[in-house]
Image (cartoon, rainbow, N blue to C red):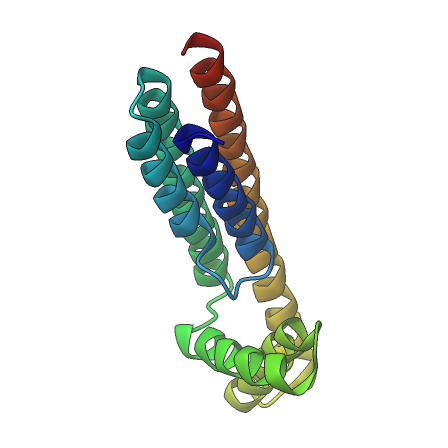
Length: 166
């Protein structure tokens, strides 16, 4: 195997792990994708590598931005404070260790509901705002995932062009 093939395989694995990191938010998904693109572009040192890096970076940054903007806007509309989301995140991390596989989601939802209940003193209102926060988070993750997949597509096209023209 030559060096280009090894770098390409490593980048492909990192991009796949990055996409998985968006769905299971334990890993820094889009950042890992950006680093994989940069490493691949440096490793193959071709025009296709750098063009692929440019488009992949554009998609990954757009995904991170869209996720933050969509989630933040929905949370502000429902007047859900950042403290509730932070409590949900901490509970999600704890849940990840207590309940394998689904603990992150269960912990986040439970922590968010508990924090909103303490804030609002009404279970129905807390459940409604927690559900809105979960939907907003899911929408942000979906937008980031779609753009990460677009970045992965840009990488696949770059790989094809690189190996077809060398």
